[in-house]
Image (cartoon, rainbow, N blue to C red; front, side):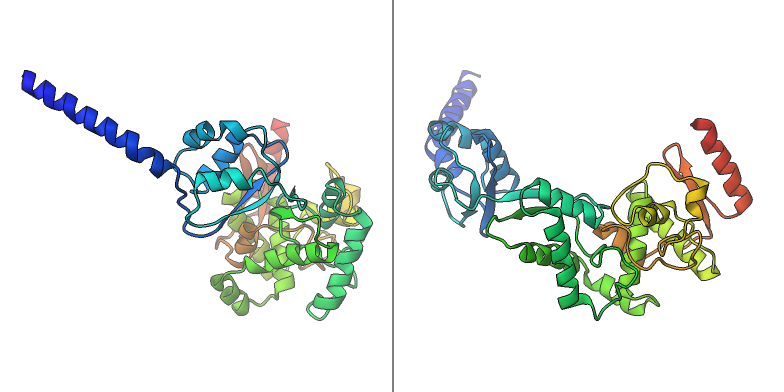
Length: 335
C-alpha cells in the first residue's frame, strides 16, 4: 500500500513538473488558424479583451492572458487589430498598446429597423447627418438599382435593402461606402438555395423583400415567420387583401414615424402601402428584414390559415373568419 502511495506521489510530482515547464509555453501560444480581427473599444479592460480572444478561439486561457498581461492593463488603447497566425500573447500585448487613429465605430441596426431609423442611428453615432445618409441612399439607388425596381411611390428608395447587423465602421469611410456596405451585406446573405427558390418564384426580388419586411414586422418570434408567410401567400393566392396593420402604420407615417395603435379610421386612409384598401403586395418594403424573414418569404409554411391575431405567447392562427373572431375576442379579454 505504501509503495502504491509513493508511486502516486511521484506521478503527481512528475505531472506537476511537466506542467510547470510545458504549460506556460502552451498557453503563451495563439491557436487561430487564420488571421483574426480584434476590436478593442474605448473603455475595454484587459479582462474584456481576454474574453474576446478566448471566445474567438485565439487563446486557450483568458485567466493566463490576464495574469501575464497585468503590467499593461492600464495601457490598452482602442483600435482594430489583426492577430496573425502563430502569434504569441506577447505579440498581442504589444499591438494592443499601439492604438489606432482609425478607431472603429460600432453601430448595431436591429432587424425590422426602417431606413429612417438607420439614418437616425448613424447620426447618433456621429458618422453622418440624417439627411446626408438618406440622400446617399437615393444616389446609390439611382446609380445601381433604378433598373431593378421603380421608386415612384416609395418613400425611401432603398427601404428593405439595408441589412440589419452590427457593423464596425471606420471614420475614414465615406457615407457612400457605408451605404454600399449595408447593401452588399444584405445581398451576400442570399445563399444558393434562396437564389434557386427566387428563380422559381412568381415574384421578383423586390416583391420577396417586401413580403419579408411584412413578416419581419408581424412575427412575434422566429417560429412564427414561416407560418405568417404562409398566411400572406394564402391570401395572395385567393385575391384577399393582406390587411396588415404594419403597412398602414408605415404608410401613415410616410416611412418615418411609428404609431403604437391603429384606429379604424386609419384603415381607410389612402396611401400606396395600405393593404386594407389595396390588394396584393405593397409597392415596397416597410422595413429592413433579416435573413430569417427573407428565408421565410421564400419558403412559406404550407397550411390553410388565413387569419392571425396576437395571443398570450405569440399569434393565434385561424382558417375561417368565424374562428378568427373568437380568437380576437379572447385576446380582448386579456387586455
